[in-house]
Image (cartoon, rainbow, N blue to C red; front, side, top):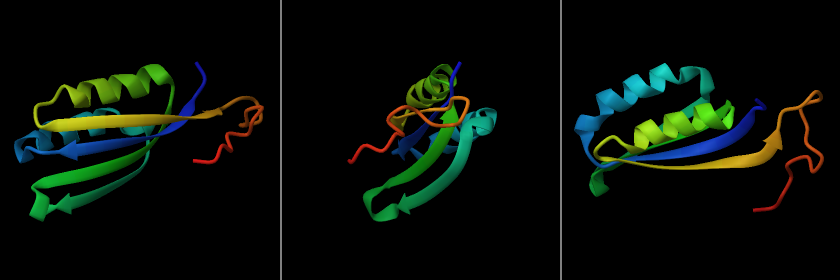
Length: 97
């Protein structure tokens, strides 16, 4: 399967979910290129952003399992970039946002 690059946003509303989420992120650590966490204590939530690279099945498994955790909300976006022989797609994945 071809690899895609994407972003996963995780919002944690229940701190008791953190250990289970961390275990899950460790299990899928091979997909994670970068991770940033931001505690928004005054709002009572924590945000984690992930940069991921992998096939859609593996990324979907990670986000699906994380989204089933109580107190965890997940959204993901995959880019049009598909890793081929030269690492580029025909459109070079350069669409404006």
